[in-house]
Amino acid sequence: MVKVIRIKRIQRNSRFWMQNSRDSVNYEPISAPHQCQSSNNESILSASVKHSSAISQSVSYKRNNQVVPDDQQMSDARNSIDKINILDSSNNNLFDIDKNEEQARRRKRYAFPWMKLWSCCLICAALILIGLIVAIAILLSRHNSNTTMPIDAIDNTTVATIPTTDTSTFTTSPTTTISQSNWLVNGAAENGPCSANASIVYPKGWNYNGSITQEYYNSSEAEVLSTDPGPSNRGDCFFYGGPLSPSVTSMWQYVNMTGSIDPVLIDNQTVYFNFTAWLGGYEEQQDNAQATSTFLNQTSQQVGSSFTLGPVTNIQRSNQTSLLFRSSNGLVPVGTRSCLVMIKITIFQGTDNDGSIDNIHLHFYQ
Image (cartoon, rainbow, N blue to C red):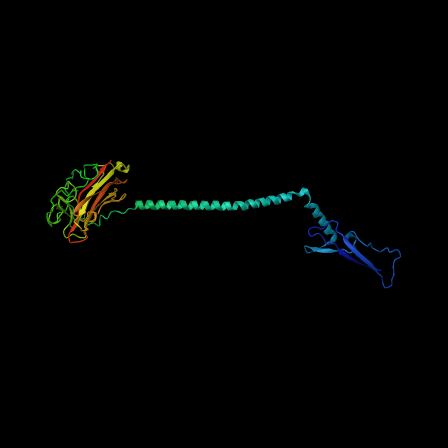
């Protein structure tokens, strides 16, 4: 008799070989052609086989390109289960490791946005600081790069000076005069002769350009009367744009301050100035005058700001021939060693420059 065995293997666990995996075995005897049977049926197998080890035929499988018998597979599975049993409470350290790793990942996820935020804040602060430094540098460079007054551009053809100093008392100002000593030479046009007609008499003590002249009040040329609105102590003469004048005529002079003022007082910002003048013109004409004071350092470079008086327009004069008072005062800038006073008279219509100015005063005090 030939024995045919059909084995239906129970499905194994997907992760491990189970220790007690079983196989169901069905067999049925098939009669041989000669129908020979053993008397004692010694070869009959049991209807069910409990263990796969009872099967005479060995089943093998491939692992790592090697053929491994079934009994070795079972042994490996048992060893693996013995080593790592996920249901064993003694191996809870695996869960602790996973938990710690998960917590570390969470901390990284939470910390990363804060790191980005702090980085952005630091970058913004650095950019703001750089911007402030650049702005301060620009302001300092502008302050230190003040241009020199265009003195060389002025036609310095004639210089007439007299060693006298104008000490006239200035009492008609709307404000109280602090110093009685005028630092300008011939600031009231009273030094030297004056013109009574269309002739030109250049101002004494001033550098000049054009036809600017010292003119008498009540002259036929300027037609500015001593009774017209103006300073009460106007004297006999004033500065006049002049006949047949160019569009702009001017005069100027330098004041050396260190001869009578200690530079330490200036640099300690304890010295102040008071700059005043009377400016005007003729009737409805727009010809006008203006006066500017500029402070200079040891190398004749401008320090601080310039201060300008006027011009006084015909509208401000109500189209009346007159002289109006203007003043400027403040702190002498640090580093000042001298002062430049510039007078400009501008013509707008007609052939004569009818702008006028008188009683130009510059005072210093503490």
